[in-house]
Amino acid sequence: MSTPRVSPAPVPASPQVPASPQRIGGLSIRQTSVLLNENTRYALMLYAPAKFGKTTMAATLDELTRKQLNKPTLFIPLEASDGGGTMSVRAHNLAYVIPETYDEMQKLIPALIEDTTFGGIVLDSGSEYVDRFVKPYALRFPPKDQTPTRIAGVPERSDYQTMGERVRQDFNRLMAVTKHPDPNKRKHLVVTALEKERTDSRGNLTGIVPDLPGAMALASAAVFQTVGSIRIVNTVVKDEQGKASRVSARMFSIAPDGIRIAGDRMNVLPEMCAPNLCEMWYTYVVPAFSAEPLTGESR
Image (cartoon, rainbow, N blue to C red):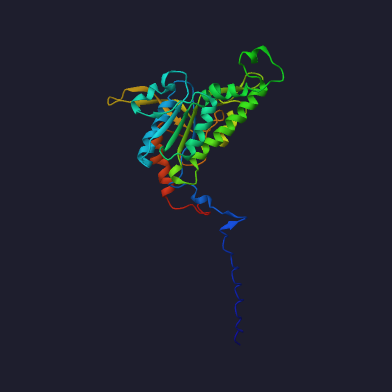
């Protein structure tokens, strides 16, 4: 007796996935997978102790912008010394401008945003920017209590809140040069700063952060795409005869060590590398956006 033949159950048709809309609420819909591309620019905070090579590293941005964009980099050096602190990099023949007042700086920022001559901006340093411009700006406002120290130019707690908010606004305005809708006006941005230690009520070290006022010391990590420091790394090398010797080298680091604020939102830089912005760009950033576009599966 033959077994009756059973027809297979019909396979349900796959539901039609609606095409993604191009706009919503009048705004263009974009994809994060192509955020890193040939129009991407550095938005980098570099902090370290004095004489650690911040200006020297920042000067390598000029090498990058001339090679990538055929444009020079503009330095804004703010130290009190002749040349604003650029004496150590005079061999680079950098273009620089030194604003003398806070109002001049406020006029400079919108000019930088719309400029097409330069391919990069270096503010050296953010700490000096606070001391020279933002602190006097904050001290213009009448205090609750006019203490002798404030009369002498020492900010009170409320002044630091004003300073922190002013720096946040100015850095956000500067950040516009890195994301201008016109690619010809987009620029790399590097802001340097000294570092400072944060301690708890018992004097225990809780962090090493950029020397910026108020909440900006921590908030800088949210403003800049890349935040890193220059560190001295000791290694042991051997010569041809096998004799070992200790060598110290300066390295740019985004390594999160639980103490320093550091990180790279582009997620392409190694934890430590040579402090050369041009080499970093062509070694790590360009290969990342030249690769196949990211997909959900590859993430």
